[in-house]
Length: 393
Image (cartoon, rainbow, N blue to C red; front, side, top):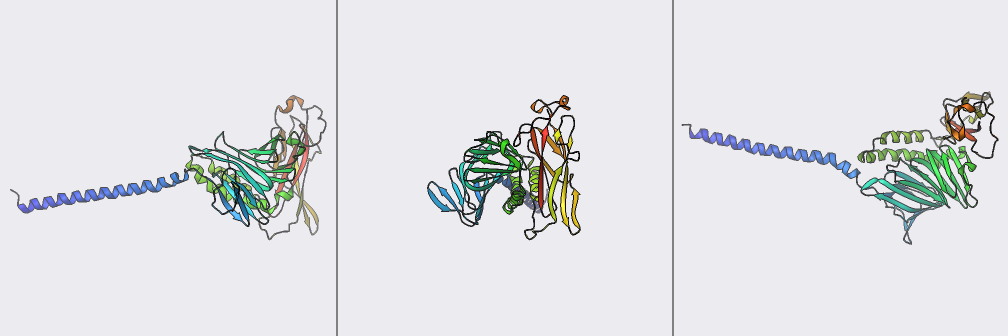
């Protein structure tokens, strides 16, 4: 028979083990709860339905809602029907549902016709804006749903996109659209597409049938505009923030999209506002063969030359492979490193038409022409140049 002390000792060991087992289980349970709480909280928070909010206010900015005028403050939610107005030396920016960023320049007015997001499917969004005066910048990251839409209207001319950056300027009866990234579609009084690097100036009182009639390369003045450069920089910050939001929604291309926006921001000019001089004076584009007709079977080589004013006189540098090349109509021709190639079967053109005579030249960017633009900057200034290339038939 075991001594009584042995039984007491064993009971103590058993009780001690039970207590520590329970205590250990409690610690593990608490740790697991903390673990899952920490790592689930962020995605749940990010996945909440985002809003349209004011993210930047400078100077005197007002919002008119249901007939009542209020002063705008950062963080204020924007609703359908609101009208934003900026005064002299003032500016404002709005983020719509973590997918698009809109910046309003000074002396501008913008009406929010529609700002809708599907709470059950946050990737489904519709934003429709009307510029009544001034200038508005739009950066739209890739829309996540086929039923989503984004558009900016001015006096009956609507610019619609799915993923790009562009500016609409409205004054009296004139609408000017400058495209900095991607391609936008124009509808309403005028129809057509505007590619990156091109502008369209539309007389809304007597609008052209197609945007091709008023298409032109974007000017250096617009490219070097300080407000434009500010928007490019702010877009890069905005897109980086959106990466986490989009990853929470299951979008896997967010990082690549941010890099593209960052690249656009880094390609800006006059990065240092204190630098106002450069000996880089202008850019010219020419064909070494002096041939400006594009045949189906023969790519056309163009050359970009940067001209500098040196103490010993003007110097010229070949920047063909360094320049950024764009074409007014990517559906008609492509350009890479200055080599222009006809898109097959455009307007009935095939490889059998290689030796055919060119069509007659018509005003503007007609159906039988394309505008080829090259732009390059030396780290301080950027210049662009363009040539019209005739498409053979």
